[in-house]
Image (cartoon, rainbow, N blue to C red; front, side, top):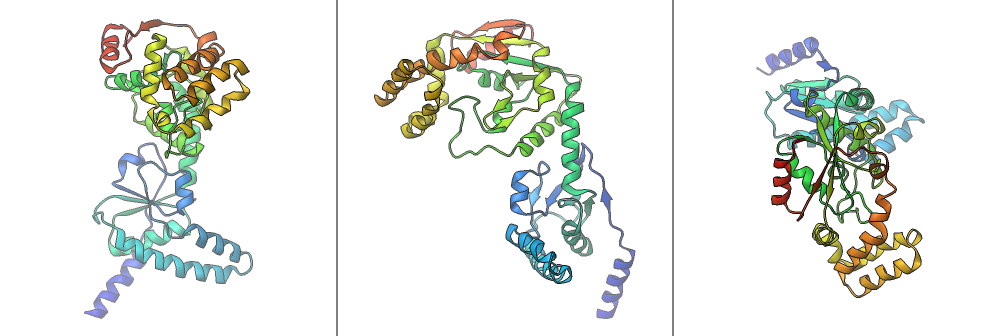
Length: 358
């Protein structure tokens, strides 16, 4: 019996064909499981959407093997094989998907790291495939798509000064239209108080991958609605080709009273009022921008923890003045204007229903 099993295994190895596939835009939907075997730091920087990270080498192990390779390539490969084999044994224990699930495996460029896990899982009996060119082939497609394919879409903008509820408007609009929330994907609110506590911004590469994935889900024959933005969202940048064509479609401007805007900002940024030191740190950045006497009013309201007055002063002395210098205010043709009596979901839903452009 043992000899029969050995014979079957050897025969399988001789007849084993490596199932390599090239990257395409539908790959995310074509596979039940996508495994990224690169290091945790490589995965965090960017990865194919919906993939899971089963590293065959840790960051430290990859660095050590890479350094020793220059001195003795044979010994480095030997040590690498030993470490990868041990790590693969731990990965096998973690696997909870069915052997019939269509599974894609990739590393940096489709080399030994992904091949190692592929061969073991293939031999066990899993339905595995190897991504030819690895992550590099995916990244190449993202760059190409954002440079050439994305501009085939028609973009429309929701515009308006800070605190007018553009993000909330987009959220409601997404129930019936194709919408991309550039700020949501960037984990940032796009203003001086835009940093979200305990929620770091992704890398530029991952941001671009998220935009690519979102666009890839959409119908090219239908318009996409976005918020009118500066090209920078925190430390990240909206792909330049997309940003340049955003104002070329319909541009719907939202208006609301300063009182409504103040109340909305207080609600939307409540984590700042709950942490005065965090707010102070964010506002101190404005010292270089706002005239001294105006900034004193902001500092005084912060010191007194009068947050309504603080936000109102920020609107008057910073946000509204800054908006007057933006592309949206100076060079964008307005298609329609919506006056919001209150910045609430109900009011926005009503505005969407009544406006002919939606």
